[in-house]
Length: 93
Image 1 (tube, rainbow, N blue to C red):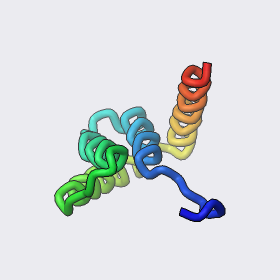
Image 2: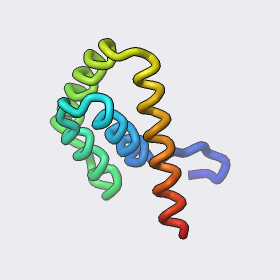
Image 3: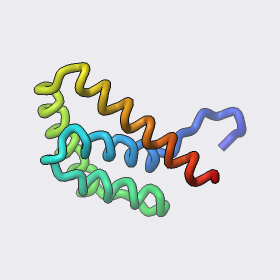
Image 4: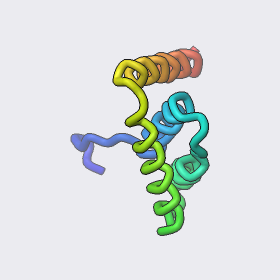
């Protein structure tokens, strides 16, 4: 990719989202997102089945999030951001 291209690793995005959803919606199985995350990290192709499973999980999360207040979601996001930053500091130490 050209050096001036904005790029975010999708597997990292999936990992952060999955961790957040495990915090807010622990009753929803996040395995489909974990599979997508792992395959992306390994550079392996995704199948339609992988994507369909992940979309089902995302729809379940979306339906569940409607039941949470904005404050609950914001608090969970903040906790997850703090944990990500602390993990990065630990890895850099």
